[in-house]
Image: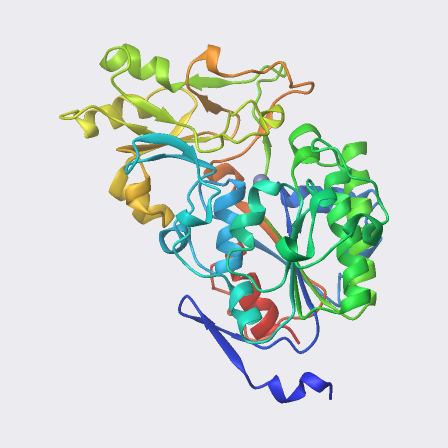
Length: 414
Ligand SMILES: [Zn+2]
Protein backbone atom coordinates (compact mmCIF):
# COMPACT_ATOMS: atom_id res chain seq x y z
CA UNK A 1 0.00 0.00 0.00
CA UNK A 2 1.22 3.50 -0.82
CA UNK A 3 2.23 6.16 1.67
CA UNK A 4 -1.24 7.63 1.26
CA UNK A 5 -2.73 4.33 2.44
CA UNK A 6 -3.69 5.72 5.79
CA UNK A 7 -5.77 8.33 4.01
CA UNK A 8 -7.84 5.85 2.02
CA UNK A 9 -10.63 5.83 4.54
CA UNK A 10 -10.75 9.63 4.59
CA UNK A 11 -13.63 11.36 2.83
CA UNK A 12 -14.00 15.01 1.91
CA UNK A 13 -17.43 16.68 2.00
CA UNK A 14 -18.11 19.44 -0.54
CA UNK A 15 -21.48 21.05 -1.31
CA UNK A 16 -23.40 18.22 0.36
CA UNK A 17 -21.58 15.39 -1.40
CA UNK A 18 -18.82 13.17 -0.11
CA UNK A 19 -15.66 12.17 -2.01
CA UNK A 20 -13.19 9.43 -1.11
CA UNK A 21 -9.50 10.24 -1.03
CA UNK A 22 -7.91 9.23 -4.37
CA UNK A 23 -6.26 5.80 -4.22
CA UNK A 24 -4.01 6.83 -7.13
CA UNK A 25 -3.57 10.07 -9.07
CA UNK A 26 -6.85 11.22 -10.60
CA UNK A 27 -6.89 13.24 -13.83
CA UNK A 28 -10.27 14.75 -14.70
CA UNK A 29 -10.37 16.11 -18.26
CA UNK A 30 -13.03 18.52 -19.49
CA UNK A 31 -12.90 18.51 -23.29
CA UNK A 32 -14.52 21.74 -24.41
CA UNK A 33 -17.33 21.24 -26.93
CA UNK A 34 -16.90 17.45 -27.08
CA UNK A 35 -20.07 16.25 -28.75
CA UNK A 36 -19.95 12.44 -28.17
CA UNK A 37 -19.73 11.82 -31.92
CA UNK A 38 -16.23 13.38 -32.05
CA UNK A 39 -14.88 10.47 -30.01
CA UNK A 40 -16.96 7.90 -31.88
CA UNK A 41 -15.81 9.16 -35.30
CA UNK A 42 -12.16 9.41 -34.25
CA UNK A 43 -12.24 5.81 -33.01
CA UNK A 44 -13.97 4.65 -36.21
CA UNK A 45 -11.29 6.37 -38.31
CA UNK A 46 -8.52 4.68 -36.33
CA UNK A 47 -7.33 8.08 -35.06
CA UNK A 48 -7.80 7.45 -31.33
CA UNK A 49 -6.31 4.06 -30.44
CA UNK A 50 -6.16 4.72 -26.69
CA UNK A 51 -9.83 5.64 -26.63
CA UNK A 52 -10.61 2.52 -28.65
CA UNK A 53 -8.62 0.46 -26.14
CA UNK A 54 -11.06 1.39 -23.35
CA UNK A 55 -13.68 -0.91 -24.88
CA UNK A 56 -13.83 -3.77 -22.41
CA UNK A 57 -11.49 -2.40 -19.73
CA UNK A 58 -12.93 1.08 -19.22
CA UNK A 59 -16.35 2.70 -19.04
CA UNK A 60 -18.10 4.84 -21.66
CA UNK A 61 -21.33 6.57 -20.64
CA UNK A 62 -23.35 9.54 -21.82
CA UNK A 63 -24.31 12.31 -19.41
CA UNK A 64 -26.29 15.54 -19.37
CA UNK A 65 -24.43 18.80 -18.99
CA UNK A 66 -25.89 21.94 -17.47
CA UNK A 67 -28.12 24.17 -19.62
CA UNK A 68 -27.09 26.82 -20.67
CA UNK A 69 -24.64 24.46 -22.34
CA UNK A 70 -21.80 26.96 -22.07
CA UNK A 71 -18.22 26.67 -20.87
CA UNK A 72 -18.12 28.48 -17.54
CA UNK A 73 -21.36 27.16 -15.98
CA UNK A 74 -20.30 23.61 -16.79
CA UNK A 75 -16.67 23.84 -15.75
CA UNK A 76 -17.81 25.28 -12.42
CA UNK A 77 -20.45 22.58 -12.05
CA UNK A 78 -17.81 19.90 -12.63
CA UNK A 79 -15.37 21.28 -10.05
CA UNK A 80 -18.06 21.97 -7.44
CA UNK A 81 -20.10 18.80 -8.10
CA UNK A 82 -23.20 20.97 -8.13
CA UNK A 83 -25.49 22.85 -10.56
CA UNK A 84 -25.44 26.64 -11.06
CA UNK A 85 -28.28 27.08 -8.53
CA UNK A 86 -25.60 26.19 -5.95
CA UNK A 87 -22.42 27.77 -7.38
CA UNK A 88 -24.01 30.80 -9.06
CA UNK A 89 -22.14 30.80 -12.40
CA UNK A 90 -24.87 30.57 -15.04
CA UNK A 91 -23.11 32.13 -18.04
CA UNK A 92 -19.94 33.71 -19.31
CA UNK A 93 -21.72 37.04 -19.20
CA UNK A 94 -24.75 38.44 -17.36
CA UNK A 95 -26.71 41.51 -16.29
CA UNK A 96 -25.62 42.29 -12.74
CA UNK A 97 -28.73 43.60 -10.96
CA UNK A 98 -26.59 45.19 -8.21
CA UNK A 99 -24.63 47.43 -10.57
CA UNK A 100 -27.24 47.40 -13.39
CA UNK A 101 -24.45 46.64 -15.84
CA UNK A 102 -23.74 43.85 -18.32
CA UNK A 103 -20.51 42.22 -17.15
CA UNK A 104 -18.37 39.14 -17.59
CA UNK A 105 -19.06 36.54 -14.92
CA UNK A 106 -15.49 35.28 -14.65
CA UNK A 107 -14.66 37.07 -11.40
CA UNK A 108 -14.57 34.70 -8.37
CA UNK A 109 -16.73 37.19 -6.47
CA UNK A 110 -19.70 35.70 -8.35
CA UNK A 111 -18.90 32.16 -7.12
CA UNK A 112 -21.23 31.02 -4.34
CA UNK A 113 -19.72 27.62 -3.50
CA UNK A 114 -16.33 26.13 -2.82
CA UNK A 115 -14.67 23.69 -5.22
CA UNK A 116 -13.79 20.02 -4.74
CA UNK A 117 -10.28 21.00 -5.84
CA UNK A 118 -9.80 23.57 -3.07
CA UNK A 119 -11.31 21.26 -0.44
CA UNK A 120 -8.91 18.42 -1.27
CA UNK A 121 -5.98 20.83 -1.30
CA UNK A 122 -7.03 22.15 2.13
CA UNK A 123 -7.03 18.54 3.37
CA UNK A 124 -3.46 18.06 2.16
CA UNK A 125 -3.85 16.76 -1.38
CA UNK A 126 -1.57 18.10 -4.10
CA UNK A 127 -3.87 19.61 -6.72
CA UNK A 128 -3.05 20.93 -10.21
CA UNK A 129 -5.38 22.84 -12.54
CA UNK A 130 -4.47 23.63 -16.15
CA UNK A 131 -6.92 25.46 -18.38
CA UNK A 132 -6.53 26.49 -22.01
CA UNK A 133 -8.22 29.89 -21.79
CA UNK A 134 -7.31 32.29 -19.04
CA UNK A 135 -10.99 33.31 -18.58
CA UNK A 136 -11.51 30.20 -16.46
CA UNK A 137 -8.35 30.30 -14.38
CA UNK A 138 -9.50 32.59 -11.59
CA UNK A 139 -12.79 30.69 -11.09
CA UNK A 140 -11.25 27.21 -11.20
CA UNK A 141 -8.39 28.27 -8.95
CA UNK A 142 -10.53 30.10 -6.41
CA UNK A 143 -9.02 29.63 -2.92
CA UNK A 144 -6.94 26.74 -4.27
CA UNK A 145 -3.65 26.03 -2.49
CA UNK A 146 -1.97 24.37 -5.44
CA UNK A 147 -0.87 24.81 -9.02
CA UNK A 148 -3.19 26.70 -11.39
CA UNK A 149 -2.36 28.25 -14.74
CA UNK A 150 -3.64 28.71 -18.30
CA UNK A 151 -1.83 27.86 -21.54
CA UNK A 152 -3.00 31.24 -22.84
CA UNK A 153 -0.75 33.00 -20.28
CA UNK A 154 1.82 30.22 -19.89
CA UNK A 155 4.60 32.76 -20.45
CA UNK A 156 3.50 34.78 -17.39
CA UNK A 157 3.28 32.13 -14.65
CA UNK A 158 5.03 32.77 -11.36
CA UNK A 159 5.51 30.66 -8.27
CA UNK A 160 3.69 33.34 -6.25
CA UNK A 161 0.61 33.59 -8.49
CA UNK A 162 0.38 30.11 -10.03
CA UNK A 163 2.26 27.80 -7.65
CA UNK A 164 4.70 26.89 -10.43
CA UNK A 165 7.29 28.54 -12.66
CA UNK A 166 8.58 28.06 -16.20
CA UNK A 167 5.81 25.91 -17.63
CA UNK A 168 6.99 26.62 -21.20
CA UNK A 169 10.06 24.44 -20.74
CA UNK A 170 8.01 21.95 -18.71
CA UNK A 171 5.56 21.50 -21.60
CA UNK A 172 8.35 21.68 -24.18
CA UNK A 173 6.16 23.85 -26.38
CA UNK A 174 6.21 27.54 -27.37
CA UNK A 175 3.39 29.78 -26.15
CA UNK A 176 0.38 28.81 -28.31
CA UNK A 177 -1.97 31.23 -30.07
CA UNK A 178 -5.31 31.71 -28.29
CA UNK A 179 -7.04 30.60 -31.50
CA UNK A 180 -5.37 27.27 -32.11
CA UNK A 181 -5.53 23.54 -31.42
CA UNK A 182 -2.13 23.97 -29.78
CA UNK A 183 -3.74 25.93 -26.91
CA UNK A 184 -5.39 22.65 -25.84
CA UNK A 185 -2.38 20.50 -26.68
CA UNK A 186 -0.32 22.63 -24.30
CA UNK A 187 -2.72 21.66 -21.47
CA UNK A 188 -2.04 17.97 -22.10
CA UNK A 189 1.71 18.35 -22.67
CA UNK A 190 2.10 20.26 -19.39
CA UNK A 191 -0.26 17.86 -17.59
CA UNK A 192 1.68 14.77 -18.66
CA UNK A 193 5.01 16.35 -17.71
CA UNK A 194 3.63 17.39 -14.31
CA UNK A 195 2.10 14.01 -13.57
CA UNK A 196 5.42 12.36 -14.32
CA UNK A 197 7.51 14.88 -12.36
CA UNK A 198 5.33 15.75 -9.35
CA UNK A 199 2.63 13.04 -9.28
CA UNK A 200 -0.14 15.30 -7.91
CA UNK A 201 -3.13 13.57 -6.27
CA UNK A 202 -5.71 15.39 -8.41
CA UNK A 203 -5.36 17.15 -11.76
CA UNK A 204 -8.08 19.06 -13.61
CA UNK A 205 -7.39 19.71 -17.29
CA UNK A 206 -9.73 21.92 -19.30
CA UNK A 207 -9.31 22.52 -23.04
CA UNK A 208 -10.82 25.02 -25.51
CA UNK A 209 -13.39 24.35 -28.24
CA UNK A 210 -11.58 26.21 -31.03
CA UNK A 211 -11.41 23.01 -33.11
CA UNK A 212 -15.00 21.92 -32.36
CA UNK A 213 -16.43 25.33 -33.37
CA UNK A 214 -14.81 24.97 -36.80
CA UNK A 215 -14.74 21.26 -37.56
CA UNK A 216 -17.54 18.69 -37.46
CA UNK A 217 -17.06 15.17 -36.01
CA UNK A 218 -15.17 12.87 -38.34
CA UNK A 219 -13.49 15.62 -40.40
CA UNK A 220 -9.68 15.47 -40.79
CA UNK A 221 -8.98 18.38 -38.41
CA UNK A 222 -11.32 17.01 -35.75
CA UNK A 223 -9.81 13.54 -35.99
CA UNK A 224 -6.31 15.02 -35.77
CA UNK A 225 -7.30 16.81 -32.55
CA UNK A 226 -8.67 13.62 -30.99
CA UNK A 227 -5.59 11.70 -32.15
CA UNK A 228 -3.43 14.21 -30.26
CA UNK A 229 -5.65 13.91 -27.20
CA UNK A 230 -5.73 10.12 -27.34
CA UNK A 231 -1.92 10.06 -27.37
CA UNK A 232 -1.62 12.20 -24.23
CA UNK A 233 -4.45 10.41 -22.40
CA UNK A 234 -2.63 7.16 -23.12
CA UNK A 235 0.46 8.62 -21.45
CA UNK A 236 -1.53 9.68 -18.37
CA UNK A 237 -3.00 6.16 -18.23
CA UNK A 238 0.45 4.57 -18.56
CA UNK A 239 1.67 6.73 -15.66
CA UNK A 240 -0.90 4.98 -13.47
CA UNK A 241 -3.62 7.65 -13.20
CA UNK A 242 -7.34 7.20 -13.12
CA UNK A 243 -8.34 9.11 -16.27
CA UNK A 244 -11.88 10.49 -16.30
CA UNK A 245 -13.14 12.50 -19.28
CA UNK A 246 -16.24 14.53 -19.89
CA UNK A 247 -17.24 17.71 -21.71
CA UNK A 248 -18.67 21.07 -20.75
CA UNK A 249 -21.17 20.88 -23.63
CA UNK A 250 -21.76 19.42 -27.08
CA UNK A 251 -21.62 21.27 -30.39
CA UNK A 252 -23.86 21.46 -33.44
CA UNK A 253 -23.94 23.08 -36.86
CA UNK A 254 -26.25 26.10 -36.64
CA UNK A 255 -26.87 26.45 -40.35
CA UNK A 256 -29.30 25.59 -43.10
CA UNK A 257 -28.51 23.06 -45.84
CA UNK A 258 -26.57 25.72 -47.72
CA UNK A 259 -24.34 26.42 -44.71
CA UNK A 260 -25.92 29.80 -43.90
CA UNK A 261 -26.20 30.65 -40.20
CA UNK A 262 -29.80 30.45 -38.94
CA UNK A 263 -30.25 33.31 -36.47
CA UNK A 264 -33.26 34.63 -34.56
CA UNK A 265 -32.46 38.25 -33.66
CA UNK A 266 -34.22 38.61 -30.31
CA UNK A 267 -33.63 42.32 -29.67
CA UNK A 268 -35.21 43.07 -33.03
CA UNK A 269 -38.13 40.79 -32.17
CA UNK A 270 -38.72 42.49 -28.79
CA UNK A 271 -38.31 45.96 -30.31
CA UNK A 272 -41.04 45.10 -32.83
CA UNK A 273 -43.24 43.45 -30.21
CA UNK A 274 -42.89 45.87 -27.27
CA UNK A 275 -41.36 49.02 -28.74
CA UNK A 276 -37.72 49.95 -29.34
CA UNK A 277 -35.33 49.41 -26.42
CA UNK A 278 -38.00 48.34 -23.92
CA UNK A 279 -36.58 44.84 -23.39
CA UNK A 280 -32.94 43.94 -22.73
CA UNK A 281 -31.58 40.75 -24.33
CA UNK A 282 -28.55 39.09 -22.68
CA UNK A 283 -26.54 36.46 -24.54
CA UNK A 284 -24.57 34.60 -21.87
CA UNK A 285 -22.24 33.02 -24.50
CA UNK A 286 -20.63 36.45 -24.91
CA UNK A 287 -16.94 36.33 -24.08
CA UNK A 288 -13.74 37.99 -25.27
CA UNK A 289 -13.07 35.19 -27.76
CA UNK A 290 -15.77 36.03 -30.33
CA UNK A 291 -13.93 34.71 -33.38
CA UNK A 292 -15.25 31.24 -32.43
CA UNK A 293 -18.94 32.00 -32.63
CA UNK A 294 -19.69 35.72 -33.08
CA UNK A 295 -21.48 35.63 -29.68
CA UNK A 296 -24.20 33.46 -31.22
CA UNK A 297 -25.47 30.55 -29.13
CA UNK A 298 -28.74 28.76 -28.45
CA UNK A 299 -29.57 30.30 -25.04
CA UNK A 300 -30.64 33.83 -24.12
CA UNK A 301 -32.29 35.57 -21.21
CA UNK A 302 -34.35 38.76 -21.51
CA UNK A 303 -35.36 41.50 -19.12
CA UNK A 304 -38.83 42.92 -19.80
CA UNK A 305 -40.29 46.32 -18.95
CA UNK A 306 -42.36 46.61 -15.73
CA UNK A 307 -45.91 45.37 -16.17
CA UNK A 308 -45.13 43.27 -19.25
CA UNK A 309 -47.46 40.31 -19.79
CA UNK A 310 -44.83 37.58 -19.40
CA UNK A 311 -47.13 34.66 -20.26
CA UNK A 312 -48.38 36.30 -23.45
CA UNK A 313 -44.86 37.25 -24.54
CA UNK A 314 -43.64 33.68 -23.90
CA UNK A 315 -46.48 32.32 -26.06
CA UNK A 316 -45.79 34.75 -28.95
CA UNK A 317 -42.04 34.13 -28.88
CA UNK A 318 -42.44 30.34 -28.66
CA UNK A 319 -44.29 30.47 -32.00
CA UNK A 320 -41.29 31.99 -33.81
CA UNK A 321 -39.64 29.44 -36.14
CA UNK A 322 -36.36 28.14 -34.68
CA UNK A 323 -37.39 28.77 -31.07
CA UNK A 324 -37.61 25.58 -29.01
CA UNK A 325 -38.50 26.70 -25.47
CA UNK A 326 -39.48 29.96 -23.77
CA UNK A 327 -39.89 29.92 -19.99
CA UNK A 328 -40.54 32.55 -17.34
CA UNK A 329 -37.71 33.05 -14.82
CA UNK A 330 -38.95 30.76 -12.04
CA UNK A 331 -39.80 27.88 -14.34
CA UNK A 332 -36.43 28.15 -16.13
CA UNK A 333 -34.55 28.27 -12.83
CA UNK A 334 -36.39 25.17 -11.57
CA UNK A 335 -36.04 23.15 -14.76
CA UNK A 336 -32.35 23.93 -15.40
CA UNK A 337 -31.18 24.38 -11.77
CA UNK A 338 -30.15 28.01 -12.27
CA UNK A 339 -29.91 30.93 -9.82
CA UNK A 340 -33.14 32.92 -10.44
CA UNK A 341 -31.59 36.21 -9.31
CA UNK A 342 -29.15 36.01 -12.23
CA UNK A 343 -31.79 35.38 -14.92
CA UNK A 344 -33.97 37.81 -16.79
CA UNK A 345 -37.77 37.64 -16.83
CA UNK A 346 -37.74 35.00 -19.56
CA UNK A 347 -35.29 32.38 -20.80
CA UNK A 348 -35.21 31.54 -24.52
CA UNK A 349 -33.71 28.39 -26.03
CA UNK A 350 -33.41 27.81 -29.76
CA UNK A 351 -33.55 24.59 -31.73
CA UNK A 352 -30.58 22.49 -32.76
CA UNK A 353 -29.93 24.28 -36.08
CA UNK A 354 -30.65 27.84 -34.85
CA UNK A 355 -28.85 30.42 -32.72
CA UNK A 356 -30.03 33.56 -30.95
CA UNK A 357 -28.64 37.03 -31.57
CA UNK A 358 -29.56 40.55 -30.54
CA UNK A 359 -29.50 42.62 -33.72
CA UNK A 360 -27.32 42.08 -36.84
CA UNK A 361 -25.04 45.06 -36.23
CA UNK A 362 -23.97 43.66 -32.85
CA UNK A 363 -22.59 40.38 -34.22
CA UNK A 364 -19.27 40.44 -35.99
CA UNK A 365 -19.24 37.35 -38.16
CA UNK A 366 -16.21 38.45 -40.18
CA UNK A 367 -13.94 36.15 -38.17
CA UNK A 368 -15.95 33.07 -39.05
CA UNK A 369 -14.08 31.22 -41.79
CA UNK A 370 -16.29 28.10 -41.60
CA UNK A 371 -20.07 27.57 -41.35
CA UNK A 372 -21.29 28.45 -37.86
CA UNK A 373 -21.14 25.74 -35.20
CA UNK A 374 -22.21 26.60 -31.67
CA UNK A 375 -23.97 25.48 -28.49
CA UNK A 376 -25.94 26.72 -25.50
CA UNK A 377 -29.23 24.84 -25.87
CA UNK A 378 -30.76 21.58 -24.77
CA UNK A 379 -29.65 20.18 -28.15
CA UNK A 380 -26.02 20.33 -26.91
CA UNK A 381 -26.74 18.75 -23.52
CA UNK A 382 -25.42 15.23 -24.20
CA UNK A 383 -21.74 14.76 -23.40
CA UNK A 384 -19.43 11.76 -23.00
CA UNK A 385 -18.46 10.41 -19.59
CA UNK A 386 -15.47 8.12 -20.03
CA UNK A 387 -13.19 6.32 -17.54
CA UNK A 388 -10.15 4.11 -18.04
CA UNK A 389 -11.51 1.72 -15.37
CA UNK A 390 -14.75 -0.13 -14.69
CA UNK A 391 -17.29 1.55 -12.41
CA UNK A 392 -19.14 -0.18 -9.59
CA UNK A 393 -22.34 0.60 -7.77
CA UNK A 394 -23.84 3.03 -10.30
CA UNK A 395 -27.57 2.45 -10.78
CA UNK A 396 -28.56 1.90 -14.41
CA UNK A 397 -31.51 4.25 -13.91
CA UNK A 398 -29.49 7.14 -12.47
CA UNK A 399 -29.51 10.31 -14.58
CA UNK A 400 -25.82 10.99 -14.95
CA UNK A 401 -24.51 14.54 -15.15
CA UNK A 402 -21.09 15.76 -16.24
CA UNK A 403 -20.73 17.19 -12.73
CA UNK A 404 -20.96 13.67 -11.27
CA UNK A 405 -17.50 12.94 -12.65
CA UNK A 406 -15.57 13.42 -9.37
CA UNK A 407 -18.16 11.26 -7.56
CA UNK A 408 -17.89 8.48 -10.16
CA UNK A 409 -14.08 8.65 -10.37
CA UNK A 410 -13.45 8.77 -6.61
CA UNK A 411 -16.38 6.78 -5.21
CA UNK A 412 -17.18 4.26 -7.94
CA UNK A 413 -13.99 3.52 -9.93
CA UNK A 414 -12.38 0.15 -9.26
ZN1 LIG B 1 -17.10 25.26 -23.95
